Length: 462
View 1: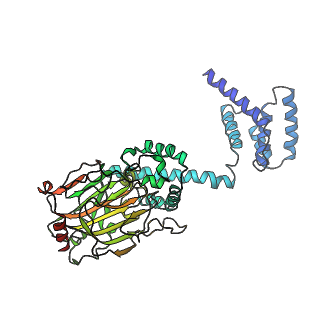
View 2: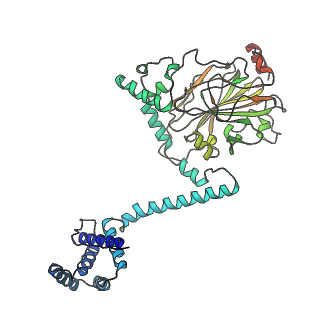
């Protein structure tokens, strides 16, 4: 206990000495606080020595000249108050040392942001606690989504796209690309050119091509993986809300847009409206996330005929697995290029979803597609339900494994297709897949190699 009181006494003497010798900073300290501090400090040491006595006389003369509440504060605080006075002195000195906190500038630029952050943290905690009470996954509230969508992510993505396209000096390429490869696990030995110096810019390195024999396209599978990546979710789409990850869903109609290609207006749900072959078929989906270190080009997952292209100019939010688990309807908010068509089992759609820092989504057969365009300085105002539509040539066919397009950074591919009810996925949640790897097939047809011409005739007959 004595050690504690000794520490308090030592701290008090040092703070009092500092307060006596304190010199106000111009435009920072008001004369009011300076006078009060010096009057208090000199009043406390009047009984120690002659120097303190002289300082007390000077302070009393100064106190007589001052008016109003200065004298009242001095008389009120001149008596010894023990530990309470020690704490008051420490707080008073701290307020002086933290200059600017008691000004209007300090209120607006310091206290107000702290208060807003504390309120937001409390709201976040209460929202998560309510979700836990209901047994639901912790997803974003509407106000959190609005704040996230208001960030200038499109401008940042355009700036990143410009930077990634800048030429990298040849001597710096091995160091830069080597660090990137180490950080994101890039297997440069699979690339068509394993020499870092052959890539002019980061964009060229991101969209590098592969050697011909490093990816095997399974000829016996009905549908193969269109890209390298990780499977976020797969399964059936039985209603208007389908899962983007386990427990978090998005609207099928908002994602695809209105089914204007269908004449089944009497059907009650969009799932039934978009089917093209048989009402007994089911609707399936598969979502694959491309990480920054993956092969960034994507291919056709099966033999199919694209008929319509829809470009939704939405947000450019992150599509990482953590964000997908946190934000419902993420794929409906983001910019995306949606290709709608048919394959031998009915309806088929292929969607390339944009993301933060994805400079552009390029589709080789669609030169008119322009993504990540400048929309002005306004942020958080992109209308995610608006789209432009293009009817593709009638002779457009894509073969299994055919090169389709590329991302300039990691993003997501979403496949939604119609198939018989005995269709089976050969996947596991979170599984890492490679382009050309089997995703699934219908019944016992997985052991047969399909005839390309026959498949095209079946598609044309729909």
